[in-house]
Length: 256
Image (tube, rainbow, N blue to C red; front, side, top):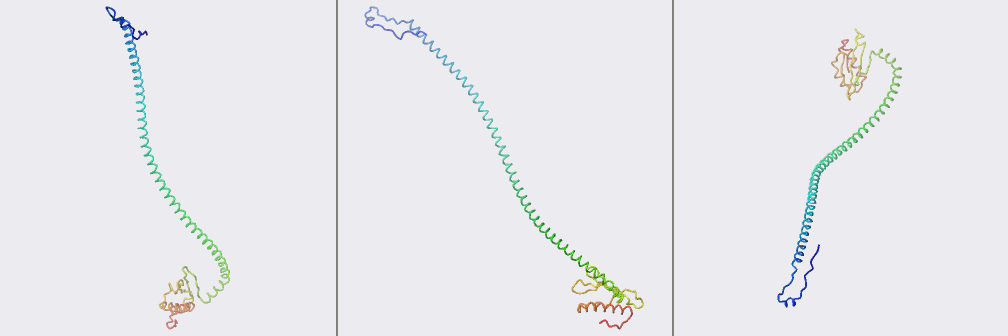
């Protein structure tokens, strides 16, 4: 680009002494300079507009990118909030489940403690039963020995007992519940084989006669005397005398 010289010089005194004074303004050069200036301004304007337009375009693109990023961030924030809500619900559920589990564990611990107590009690009972069984076994062994001893004595006494029973015409048999069956023979003169008997209960502090065969009207009196005197042998003799009186019709026999 070509620029005209800045201004020009002239001699004012010479100009004024001229009969037709004039100043050569050199208009073509000025116009050319003006055109060059306007052209330069226009070029600057165009460059500025292009720069602004380009910057505006870039700003718009950047703004669009920024808006997209903001939308993406807002979307992620929304998702995070939803996830937070879900996590809070899950956390509350887990806390409730944990509380239920702790309650269940506490209940199980109480049950286990109760089972331990019951087990200890049952073990104590088992120990007691074992000790009792051991004691019973010892007692059975001792009773077995006593039984053997008694059987040995019985084997020697039984023949003598049978001889006395035949001689006395009386037999005594043990029954259940601590009762004795006492039988007599040779009471009825007309029928020596006829049996007379009574059942004596010796389980209580007082003697009781459960049954007589045949019945004896004087039985209550005899039992009262027995409980006073405690002489069971005299009672057996008195019962036989009563049977003899009933069987043989001896009304005047003294029962005392």
